Image (cartoon, rainbow, N blue to C red; front, side, top):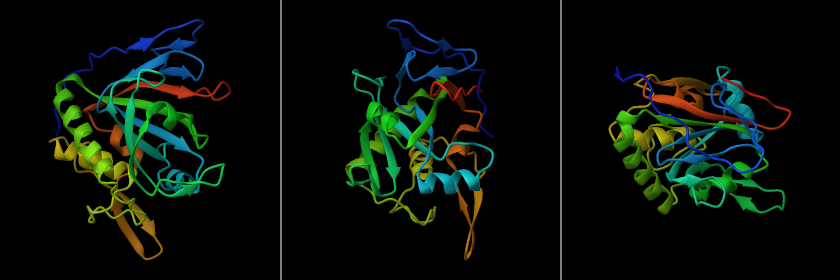
Length: 222
């Protein structure tokens, strides 16, 4: 089992103008405080895509169906925070094909995607800062290689990656098993298979919530 000390981290935010932000309740409105992301931060997202609906239905413990890892720190706006995620191919509102591989994006663009309905930031505790940095570097390499998206959700095939598998492997290569050996099981037409749901990445003792976001009419607290 992973042993950690009680969380001691505080939230870094940038403030400008009127804010509606509560650290205790982990509530962040789209028009409110701008979070500062760190390398290795895990962003869990609720998405309205077909794949997102399937994942949410398969894991009733959480509403989150997609995830990304931050690979360059900064704010989600002009300060250049970058993330890496593995996303299935889909057509955007303009009919352009997006995704289908591991890719690097700005955090601002990622969270501004119309498919993202709400999100939450998780961060490993201070004792694992080196693991976070190493995991982000591994994810950057995966993006540079444009590793294909794993639509079969097959953990036994490292040549393809799905979103939560990407983050789990990145941290595992850095020496930290985020799920502590506790895999999920997903049923398919041909049987079942061990998988890692996005929400499972945040259930281990080495990870803590940092900030939660919702739209103006979708308050979401811890």
